[in-house]
Amino acid sequence: MNTLNRIGILGYGKMGRDIFDLFHSKMPDSEFVVLLRHDIAEETEKVNKNLAKALRRKKINEEVFEKMSRNFLFTDRTDDFADCTIIIESVAENLKIKQDLFAELDKKVNDQCVFATNTSSLVIKDIFSLCSSNRKTMGLHFFYPVKLSGFIELNECGDRETCKAIAEITGKSTVDFSGNYCFYLNQYISYCISHALILTEKYNTGITNAMDILNELFPMHSLFGMADSIGLGLMLSGTTDTSVQRIRAVIDSGREKMNKYLTEGCSPETGKFIEFITEKEKETEAADPDRDSFILDMISGMLNEAAAAASENESNLTEALFDAVGLSEKFSFYYEKYGYDRISESLEAVRALTGIDSYNAVGKDVYDKFFCL
Figure 1 (cartoon, rainbow, N blue to C red):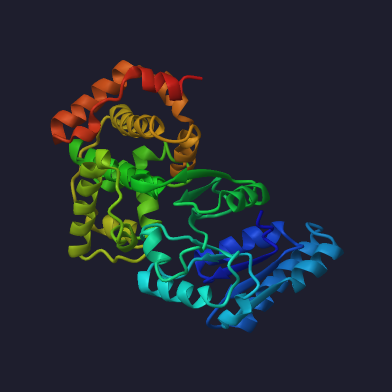
Figure 2 (tube, rainbow, N blue to C red):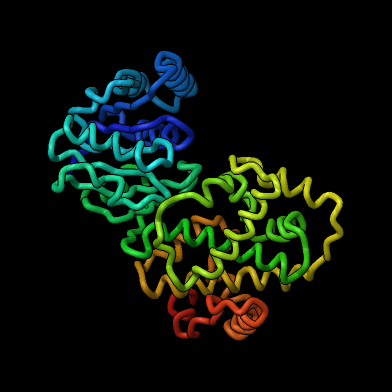
C-alpha cells in the first residue's frame, strides 16, 4: 500500500492551500513538497508563523512543532518531487497546463508515485494522456472549504488503497464515480442551482427573493451563494460531456440563464454574481411567492434526483449529496415531512410547466429505500 510518506501538491491557490493545510495538520511524520511559482519565502514564513501560534495556544506540542516546521518545502523546481509517493494537482482549470505538468513529472518520479488531480470539470483521462500507460491516476476532488466538507469525490480512481489511506488520515468519507457519473456531486450542485432558477420563473420572483426563502434550507450558504463563490465562468467551463442524461435538460436550462447573465454584464469571476443580481433586481417589481410551496418544489426536485442517482450508485451517495449542498436537514427529514404523494404532485406541476422529463417522479419504493429512517 502507498504509505503517503512524501506528498506533492501542485499549486497553492485557494484549493491548493486548503489541501496542504489539511494533510500537513494531520501528518507531522510525512514530508510535503508544494509547487509554488512565486512568494516562496513569504509563504514559508506564513506557515511557520501559524505553527508558532498553534504552539503558543497549546494546539500542538514542541515535538510536533519541530517536525511540522521542517517537513515541508515550497519550491518552483519539479525536480524536488522526485521521491513523492503521491502528487495532488490543484492548478488552474486549464487542460494543457495540467497535461504538460504531469508529463514533465512523469519523467522525474518513480513508477509507484500516484498522480491525482483536483479538477472539477476536465476529463480525467485527458489530463493524464501524456503520462506512461502504467501510471496510477485518479480524480481526487475536494470541495471548498476543504476542512468543512465531509467527503472527497473520487473520479476514475486508479488506486483505491491510496484513497483508503487518504480517507483514514483526513477523517473524510469518499464517494466513487466513473463514466457518466464522474463529477456527479458537481453535476448535482449544478442541477440544484438550475432547478432553483427554474423555480424563480415559475413563481415570477427574483433571485434575491428566492435567496431569502432558500436560507431556511441552506443555513451556511444559499444555492445562489454557491454559484457566486464558484463564479459563473467556472460553472460554465470545462470540457466534460458526462452529465447524467436524466438531468441534462435542467442543467442546460440553468446554463442558458447563466450565459444570459454574462451577456448582460455579469462578471464570470468569483464573488460577482450576487452583486450583479442585486443591482439588476433593485428596480424590479417581483412577486412575493408562497414560501412553503417554493420550498416544497425545491426539496422535491432535490430528493427526486438524489433517489434516482442513489439507485445507480454507492449506498453512501445520499450522505455525500446532503454534504455537498449543505442542506439544513437530512433528506429523510424532508421525505417524512412532505411524503411521497405531495412530492410527486409537486414534481408533476413543475414538469407540466417546463416540459422537462427530469421531473418525472422516481418510484415510491426507491424513496422508501434511501430516505426512510
